[in-house]
Amino acid sequence: MSITYDKAAKKVTRVEGHNVPAKEIAAECAGTPDAEVAGIVAAAVDSSVEEGNKVVATIDNSFYRGSDKDAGPGTNRGTESTLNNLLAEAGFWGIRETTKLGPDFGIMNAGGVREDLEKGEVTFSDAYLVQPFNNAYGVVDIKGEQVRELLEQQWKDPNSEHPRLALGLSNNVQYSYDPTAEQGKRITAIYIDGKPVDPAATYRVAGSSFLLSGGDGFSALKSGSNFTDAGVIDVDLFTRYLAEHTGVEPRTNQASVGISIKGEARPGNEVELDLSSLSYTSAGEPQAKDVTVTAGGESVTAEVDNTVVTDFDETGSATVSLRIPSDATELKIETDNGTTFTVPLDEQVSGSSSFGKFAGIAAVLAVLGGAFAFWYANVGSQLLAQFL
Image (cartoon, rainbow, N blue to C red; front, side, top):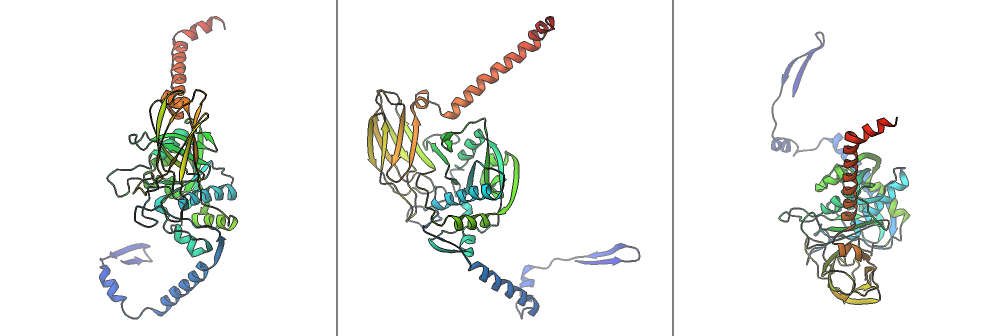
């Protein structure tokens, strides 16, 4: 662009412009580089290498991304992984420690995890390569029903390159799902801090600006309220967490547990449980060997099949059959590797999840409230006026 400006008249008198193809620019730059510019670039490179080589922490354990069958870490974005969970926990911890925003849990997207994290000395460069995006971190408020919607949105178009994009979750979150259910209706229970999520309650989520603005198709977050930028960057939260948690171990209590129940789960009946998502997928990550299901005084143990499931989160599967004794109130699922999950029998008998119960109660209250409003507007106000 060439712009001519008339100082006396204080106005632009001529503008000329033309396109320059990138190939011409490349040809012009193919010769001897400008010495001044080259010096600036070289100084920046030297400085970045020096800063990148600084050790930020020395950790005792390795953390990996998800793997597809016969492939290495990073090939399966649809499965839970030790590194994705670690990043969610680090962000959650960091926002609580560095701000007064008070999040209830943390999340991380699998596509944002680009390298594995090996034990030993961790340099700034190592940490940066894990999530090299310089995403700002913040919080957003969503309802419990939106938490369920958020987890449902991990399943994408079945024909897409990534039919599932798993969310890393902070250690205080766990959920169950039925992989055989139809899309949008797979989540069966969610717990935060050991308590069932209330669909009507508000929960504050900590995560990157990319995720909180609905990135990767997680629109449940975009529909939240009170978004606040915490003024911190992902890699800074991560390095601080590693420096203060050098002995941190991979999460063994799986955040997600697949449960599909065949038969009516009530005392005296025999049921069959198809369990999945009991193990991680990458070599070096924790895997379960067996799983035990307990109902009242009855327990059955089965071997876990750790054949890796491509694209999804069903690695670590087992089938367990048992007769439910008369004194049973719940089904307790435990692996030898540390995963535990409890299924209340009353919810299974009614065929509803905790979300269904809360939604039913809310619907009844709404109907009663509407009926009262109609009565008051048409009859009640007139009766009340007689006494005032």
